[in-house]
Length: 477
Image 1 (spheres, one colour):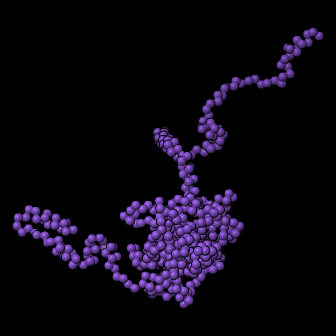
Image 2 (cartoon, rainbow, N blue to C red; image 1 turned 90 degrees about the horizontal axis):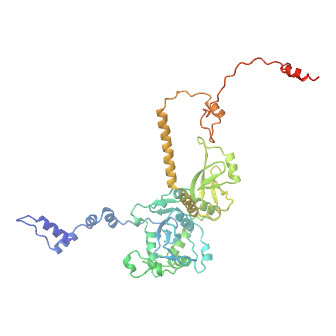
Image 3 (tube, helix red, strand yellow; image 1 turned 180 degrees about the horizontal axis):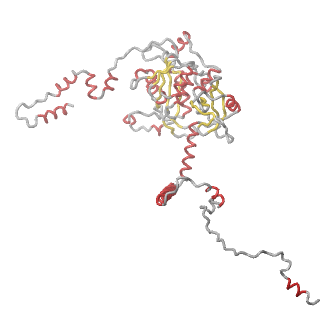
């Protein structure tokens, strides 16, 4: 920077005979810069967004009084490469969608997978957070303690990702009674807990695992994460559950002011969150499916090229009139993207869902996910397109266009036709057998020749026409 300042003065002194500007020393130059307001320096060096983020006022967080009152959610790619359980080859870095409770700092739910952050990953993480977690001890017997964090979320704090602005999420939260709080753009400090927890995962859980990746290339040195990856996906899931429940929840924070598990217990004693059990749990699972609005027609409902129908839906179509001013009956449909074999149709007048199976004689939709179905459809389209001769289609199209143009030109060069149509032409075409086999005009190919017939004498009765012959026949007698 000092060199730049000195070069500017040198250029300014060019051509000046007297009174040249003498640059200050390097120490004096930096002393003056250090006396400038830090915000102005950051604003000029970087931009307003960086300066505002660095010097923003840090206010106190809203005091929370109960668990599940405010839950933060976010995604991150894990800095770890995992292996396929059967093929034993690297799968890459999975995405983690995680929810953390603001009152207790407990992890209340998560979802780990390889699909990019989407509404599906948000729904799976929400289900994991809200429903009972008694399955953990059965599925992962090495976990010592229970994961007791579950219940209804009051406020869900999200960022500005597209998956959080979806109509599906807003509709679900409106139905189940969850408020959504959107953070302003580039304000991650307003959602600090989940952001900080991602850092804790990298520094305290993944730091010593083989296959860990690094955000900076310089940190890799001679280390190859893909080559050194040895942890299988199922093994990582076992370790991740173990670390969350038996390590993180039972450890004190850096300032030793609270332990997440004890804070949760205290909050539950004071005001336990509402739980989803039985019918409410089933309703939540249905509501978190993808939402569609479909027209009920003869044959049922059509979704993604698959038809859904049963007797109950047929009877509903028979007995339900169209809404006022509508020409068809539209129904709200929920789809579990992990199972295309059925949909859930909401009957508004009855305030309930009915399960409608797919019309699938070949069992195509059994165990089929939405992503698999979309992939299959793309493969079918690709196969069809690969069998289409584009050059032949282009030549045929050009021929058709030229033929039409030729007909138009011929029509313009011929005498104008009368404005009124000539009656009986269709009957004449029918009589002349105009068709695709041979005939194309009502004008016959050969005009019949009508010969002139001379006037003949009246015919006799024929009794005496051969009189002479008759007489000759009598000669011998």
